[in-house]
Image (cartoon, rainbow, N blue to C red):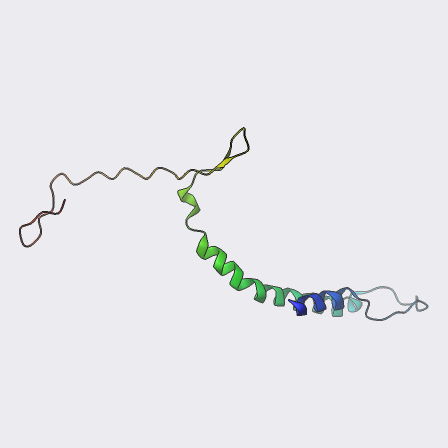
Length: 103
């Protein structure tokens, strides 16, 4: 995390002070070091965030199994599970090879 803060400070700091040199117009070549610093910053941030995003995706199961949140007048928030589709039982019970029937 410290390297992210250092990269932010370096990216936002001026590369050189040229108060009296106003003859050259501001161009893209002056932005190249800044863009490189930001690229390194975002690559580092992505590397740091990847394990956290994987953990988050593991904890979030299928969101389609839930209805939209509902806010009650007292401020409570309800998130209801969608009803499961009705599974009709088999008309005849299955007979095991030994002749027994599982209920």
